[in-house]
Image 1 (cartoon, rainbow, N blue to C red):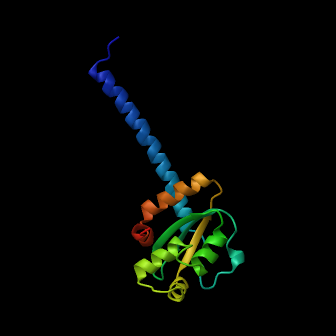
Image 2 (tube, one colour; image 1 turned 90 degrees about the vertical axis):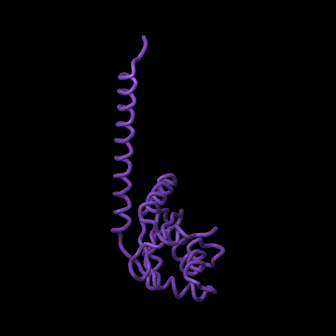
Image 3 (cartoon, rainbow, N blue to C red; image 1 turned 180 degrees about the horizontal axis):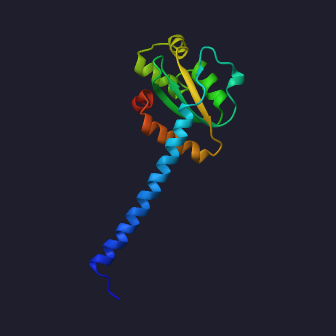
Length: 153
């Protein structure tokens, strides 16, 4: 049986509708997850206690002193990444600190430490590694954090 132009287009339209519907649902799911991240408790790098940050996997957002998202990342250990690597690490071990140095014109670790102390962060625990990657990528695409966009590797 030979298919005609109408039948081919009808099948293409159905496929398009199904794919569009699926993508809309996935986008809505991740918008919800980004909202959860942005609505979580805000913690100051300067005043945070290590007990306030779990040693669990997750996704995090870092905010500048004006409350703008400047960096989004993912990690297997939120406490280690945020409090050791980003708060008091060095540019070799932290992409965030490297980006700060490049984009804020900072020249040494002491200047970076002072700048980080002015920032806040929020996090969302996410156990599944693939889910962390997807949420980080979606949040980065939607929020367009300055330091993620300008990072020179």
